[in-house]
Image (cartoon, rainbow, N blue to C red; front, side, top):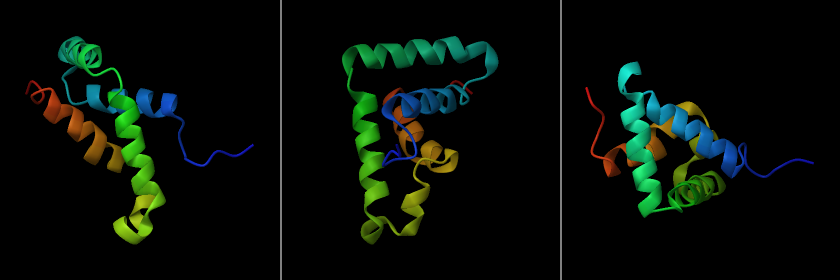
Length: 94
């Protein structure tokens, strides 16, 4: 059985979380995870919303061009949902 999108919601959440944590130095990744968990307590549907946005972009090449078919590749995951999470959480700790 094939799926419509390259990732399920669970796969998406896992990969976006991994990419988000890469923004933090190894010794500060726990802080990043704590920030993310605090956001999830306030906004428990944040990953569903980010996933829905990625799926919408993926489905609409007439709006986003053919690059939308790359929506689930690391570059665009880092550029859109990871960047959005980073903005919501006040940036990384460089």
